[in-house]
Length: 261
Image 1: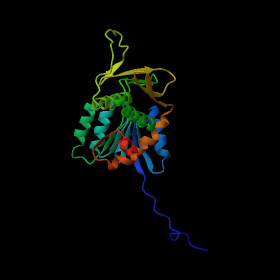
Image 2: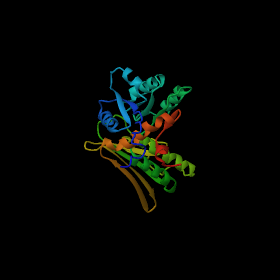
Image 3: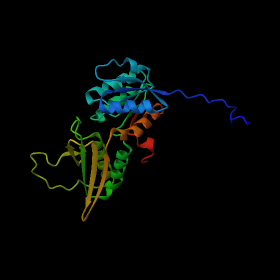
Image 4: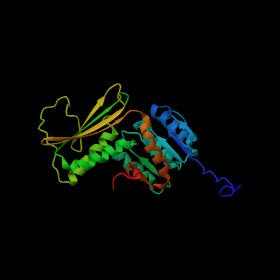
């Protein structure tokens, strides 16, 4: 019979990318470890949690950090010093921390991706909200999560509000109308760049957010609901595979997914 194409020789299998996970014993960390182990092109080489020695992670190509705000900056600094690329999903960090990471990366061969959310649905929700923002006089952001979440508002809500505020400013819109003068209990929520954000913490919820836009006589609501931690895995693993080719600091994974400009 005919010989198979290529003479029957097997093509060499490409080496799997070595991955370490910080925060491995948390609920998100455990899901990440399972996703890495299930991927043919990734190899889990270290599962690190609070109090563990980071040394085993030095053999990784990429480290994933889903820890807490008090730990994440130390983990990123360690990765940079040890030549391990980092993909960070820990929330509760902001521009000051981004600037510090960018400074630490100067002259180093290490790359870092930081995103407030790795859910494709959430990223699209933020993008749609940014597109809608110039067309509406009023806007409110409402995020609802499980009661074990340590930061409020969520990182996604902060990012969403920032994108909306920037789009409104670029369109020449003024402040969102609000006649409130008396609010001793903070019922109007947090004001982030002039956009009110409300945080709900309730048993039975996982990760939910809606953005309400309003004009005279109409309302547009953009909502995204996450039900399990598995929703973050496709976006997260996309970032893991991409980070070696993304010089310096990358904020968000929109461009990796082809979303936006």
